[in-house]
Length: 94
Image (cartoon, rainbow, N blue to C red):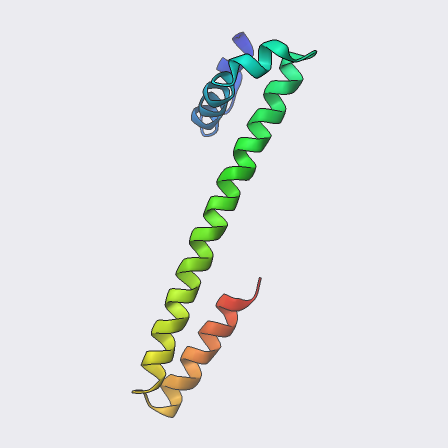
């Protein structure tokens, strides 16, 4: 595993994490025709799961901020109200 020592130090911990997580699927890897390929697919699936979980959390936080902004709009000046609306429009752009 000499190549792993040559990986950029900023991504090395992430690489090791995903190698360890993929290795937890030992039974599936052992049954695969190409275990190295299967390990990559497992790592990809783990990344997709993480991305999905982050998306869910981000959506929750966006809704919370929108609700807070709605409450704030009821008690602010027109200038502040417009500023809040501008910020919320930026947040809602994806």
